[in-house]
Length: 487
Image (cartoon, rainbow, N blue to C red; front, side, top):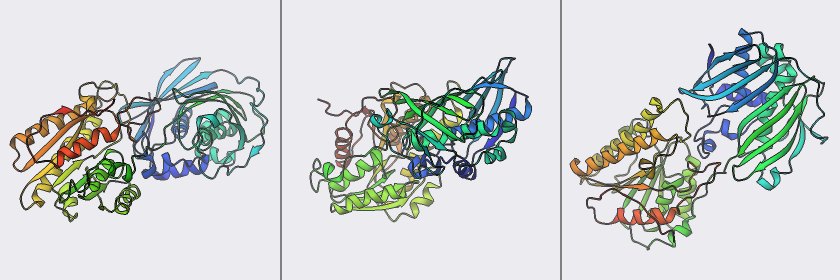
């Protein structure tokens, strides 16, 4: 049974951040969020859960004894989520929250009567309602010893204003305690680099303490997993969260320049689409180190792009920065960039977080194809028109995922495979363009950084030979897998 649907916009984000005290930039800052594995700002998970519960309690008279929540995939800001009552029995209710045709969160209510309260998990000094002002950055050694208590960010009456039906059913204090779990994970532990995985709460006898007490009970570094015991007014249970990797720092200009022959690329005018971070950042540095005039684009991360350009300029190179969105009018945007490049490196990207709605997600496939196939062709076509000699050499980064597709990346692999076919036919039929297409192995970037640690190839070992090849005399280049010197 469908319960409700809702679009979580920026106003909703700001309102829940104020209510909960959870100001983690993953939820509020598009530039910071793009450098996480999510790739874009996501809705507070607790907010989506409370919204779905509010919808359920408006329709059903329920007496839960416990609430169990599992977060399976993100809901991105601006998306419309749907809540559905999937199962209803005398002892249990299951609610599913979906977005973009994919299951995002599962909420299970066990029905019964609240039991007696347990003792608090610790007797730590109570922190104030406005603590901490900024998300705390903790490593695993510090996470292992975390324990504390903090007052609710807002009075419980504010929770009743936002979720009235839920508060009438289980009490404003309990709802306020659930709201506070978002602040616990996003601001305190794990803090800045966190993703909420799940929580399970027993509804106990309530008390007058408007605060949450918490203590770490397990840390698994291999899985980047943190489990905490929590208690508050009328609730007692456990919260699990991931300590996600921080943004990936790519090699500095000095390290790149030490491996590039000075003047090797002099006379080249290079445009790097997506040069503000990751592989595009390293490529821009390599070209500049060889004496090329470099121009980089960004979609949202102007600060990151200017950082890269500043690093290049301080080393004696040249680098200009321009906004560019591959999903927009490509020809119009490129007409505003006063560059007629001899070389194009196409590192446009999009969020890579898998969200399952079955074997294939049609909307994800459409967007991947827009970025990785249509976007590349239209960019090359527009740049050729800017060249008086109608000549352009372009690099297309395909992926080893085309041959061995990881679970959940079918749409990405399909789009990259389509890009390979496009490159082959551009080399065969398009006049004036020469495309170098390589299947890149996994390298450590913001997009590939994961809570599960995986082996990655050294970025310079992979990219520097490609840049060298790109600057050589143009000739047809067969598709092959790029390999580094891995010893």
